[in-house]
Length: 440
Image (cartoon, rainbow, N blue to C red; front, side):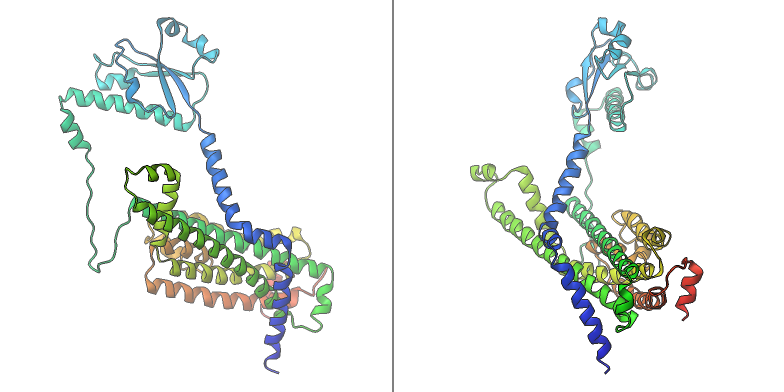
């Protein structure tokens, strides 16, 4: 008799799981998911790069010493203006001859301070922030060269001033205490990607449970089910079933991703054994391929097992935590319109965790990073964003303990609400009602 509740929950879990995984949409999304994510990232990068623009700037200055060839031409292209264009620059701007006219004093005979004061830029239309920064940066270079020249510094002295200083950092426990730029970038991007994946799946599958429960409640199907199955067992079975569906997708995606990373890493090792001046290497591999291989090699240098473990466990516990909340909401309301006033309590903490975790790459060991990875409402995304940078064992164990205990409490509270709310109709749900149902 004691095993009967567990058997009931497992039967409901099995039914919910098989119903979801047999759908064609699930199979297609599971197999194509990683490629869709990569494609989405490529599309975003393409749109971002395609939205850039180039400004054509006519330069007006009397000494003809403007360093056209020494300035970057990626965003701003400079042309010398003719005397005719100088006199009629306003009409030329209106006729779309150029984006802007840059008026400079005599660079050779004017001090750097006067150059800054006397410089004017006339534009046909507003310049975007990147173009403004580029023009300001170019003028800064000109002023720097002017000031350096006034100090009568040699080229070797200038190079010595601009020389970068690399400091070797050592740790007393012989652990790596600093990252290369590529390693830091890989950890930052990986943390952000894993964080957003956890966030999206918690919300998507949480809402799915809420709608499923709400649909059964409105169709009165639940009245038949709860006549033979306790409400708490029904809620737990549905949550665990959908959890299994999400974990199945995760493991398939992780498997596909690891195969791709290992394949690129093997190719990377093969290419490292080919001399730099080898014709075979220059033909067989492009800069993009080399970059991908270096990234995959950098990923394998991380503690992949620990990252996957934390990712799966925190998703699982975070999902159970929030899906219980979504299940309680679905059982308490009458329609989807009413869910909007309660789902804010599920979305808002996750959003705080998401946007707060953007600072983790800046300082993974900071106070904000620590608390975001400890508070149960934000730790499912906060800890996942931190784990690529390395987290002390005691912090990880403390965070897991807090999240696990909070998840059990949330499931218990949600069960109380579900038990009463699932059979209530034609009653407007309020926070007061929810608190009263918790006490029953």
